[in-house]
Length: 133
Image (cartoon, rainbow, N blue to C red; front, top):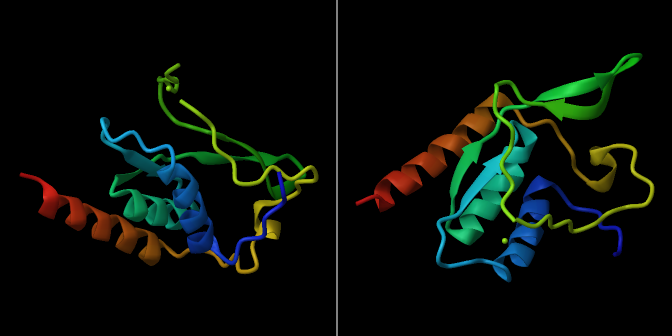
């Protein structure tokens, strides 16, 4: 698998949506989950391309003890465990051998402001409210 450099988060979402479209099961409703804030930009592109609804999953970065900007994992608040069906599949556009930080695989990895994340959620909510019977 070749290493990919994305132009920005929207480019990553469009490329992922293209691969996911080949696997789309038209018999099931789709929900795309994005991790605020930056992941929402990627998820927005996927949801748009797949005509899927968009929601968020709230996680907290698990930081390295002596390097607080280094995320070594993520944790979700609550008493539930993710349920993974058997037809679930992990799709990766790229799996670089040497991985240090997400941002190194983007030409533009600017921070996503709260206002942009909120606008994405409002736009998707409005889009699906109009489609509801």
